[in-house]
Image (cartoon, rainbow, N blue to C red):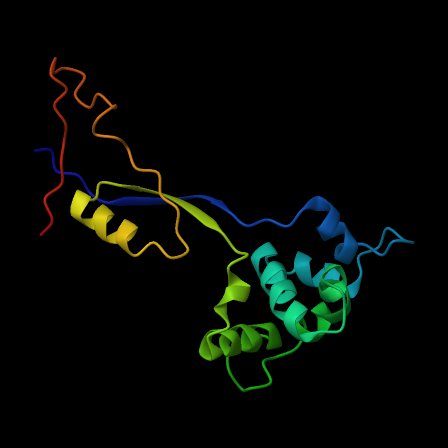
Length: 159
């Protein structure tokens, strides 16, 4: 058995489309950044914009395509009104999690490569798969041992 350490790497994550980003980043009549565009230059992430859009779609009279442009400065540009850390958007995210309305956060996605874990861990991850998709290296079709004619493989024994 070869000793293998667990390795987790982020491969991909949610990004807004270029068209959506332009809707709130640039004033349509000028090349100057709007107040919301400036916030994004200062660190508001695509994931935060998507989460705000999804959450506020449920509670706002604005169209989903307008929410960040019309409400972004209010949420991303002011301190959390509950006295907690971060911006008012962070307060909103905390409130959504506390209330259990987390379906609004399902629009965010992350893809990880997880290596060096036992099949027992993979079984538990796939058993509790709500919100997760898996692609696992096949023990049937992948020849694991290049020096071994019968296809030997490394394995991990959980502690």
